[in-house]
Image 1 (cartoon, rainbow, N blue to C red):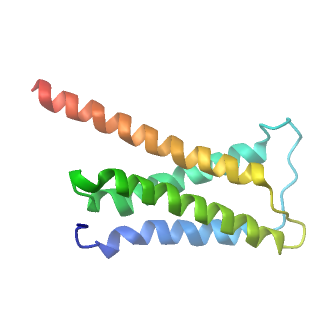
Image 2 (image 1 turned 90 degrees about the vertical axis):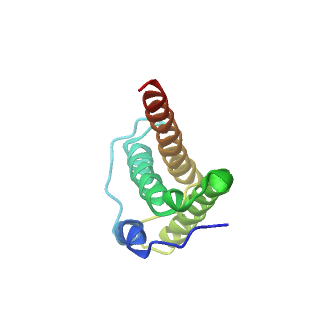
Length: 131
């Protein structure tokens, strides 16, 4: 069973989501072409790395040991849904377009934040066990 939601922990992710929506509504900034790993993809990765971190702050602390995998699935699912909705939104913005590789960069950023969170969590558990 999920613990009671701390609504204050939702404020950062909701604010960050609004910022991403706002930036997606702006004309595209021209970046020099670098192939598939363009500045645009690096910015998408970074933005959704931050999104993944904030999503974890909002969701995972409310998890019990029993449902932590479920919470991680929720972080991935919500990140993916927001990434897809962001690209759909951009398809309606003049000068912007939807790109499946942007969604891929978004998901890699969010997943990287999850992996980093899990690794840091393992390190702290090991340190506590060594004390």
